Length: 322
Ligand code: NDP
Image (cartoon, rainbow, N blue to C red):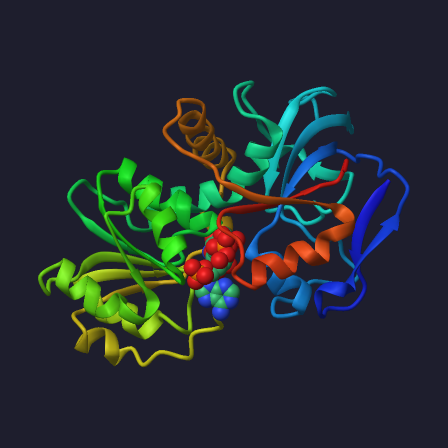
């Protein structure tokens, strides 16, 4: 079988296409025949060495496909079941082993490409809007990078929860896409602080969902109402420098959190609830999943370049069968 393997962190070219024997599932594992693997920004952090991963490794945190074989004690799934999973390393491959407790069934109405495009980013948008800062009708939220994979899903979920959504992106075309997904008002990054103040009559927003990090963090704090929450969930522009906590007092008794999906998937019930809601909304036409582009495994480096260069609007997939 084909897979990508990284022997040393670095530029996209470190992702080498290799051949390997089919892995045999052990106790509690299933072997998945991957039909589509989702690209996530964390793949770039791990490939480049910004986040450390033991070497060598096969990147990729999520995929959808078909159960191909199961090991002992794995009887909750059987060969032929359509499944998806997130947060298990090794998805840039034709086949991979996944603990069955991480698998979620994919409903018939959702194809594998959509499932792979949805799961990780959908569950991220889900925990941010339902648990990190549970959005209530009438509240106002600010979402950065709103035309990205996670951003588009966040905008839609915040709207499903009844919020007024202010959103940012780096170009007018991306802002237009954010409006198509439901954003009420949009701003380029240069303008967002003044724009938010005007849009909220100086009151500020209830929460900022910030995945851009270094370039937006300080100005995002200025956009919050007293006791508002900064949910910093990514750092696409670079890491935020250490924060003087006194700043939170001076700017209005603010809350800051740095959440991660893994801490919002602590039990199997939590996984099934978040994944189930995402799949239901897609099946009912309430949530749109935008697949921006698809690459064969052999072009994983091009896929990374596209995501890192801000060229994409929505999800990037790798298709191991192509
Ligand atoms: P996106 O599809 O959103 O792509 C990243 C976007 O970030 C770009 O399209 C770009 O949009 C924006 N961006 C801003 N500054 C930069 C920069 N300097 N370089 C590159 N991009 C920049 O990716 P994902 O949906 O995969 O991930 C979005 C963010 O969410 C990432 O930071 C990721 O780490 C985070 N994340 C966090 C999770 C968690 O649980 N904590 C889980 C999943 C994702 P624009 O051009 O409009 O600025």
